Length: 104
Image 1 (cartoon, helix red, strand yellow):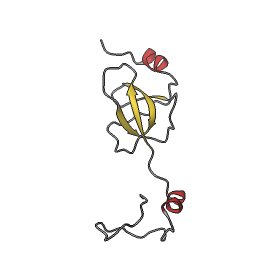
Image 2: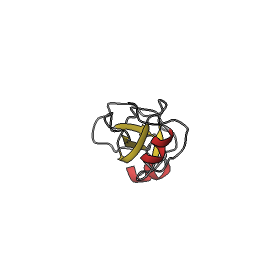
Image 3: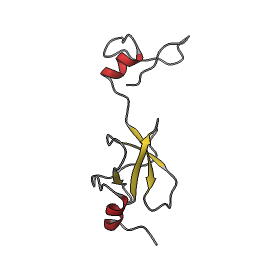
């Protein structure tokens, strides 16, 4: 569910479930926005990407499905460009790349 306010004639149809909300803030409090984050490649070989994850940001380092380590940089409006793996948080790029070395 995404939140927005009306500004004129509708150009998309929205299914009304969960009731009509008084404002975007009311809607977001009941239906939080997706969590997209910009991430940077710990090896410095690829351009920054965007992931969908409930990870927060700061010192979190995660592995993608190709065994590349990514450090979260900050929130991003999305959409996701890569998918994180299920390996958990490695804490630092050094810890992650010790387990999954950079190519070359």
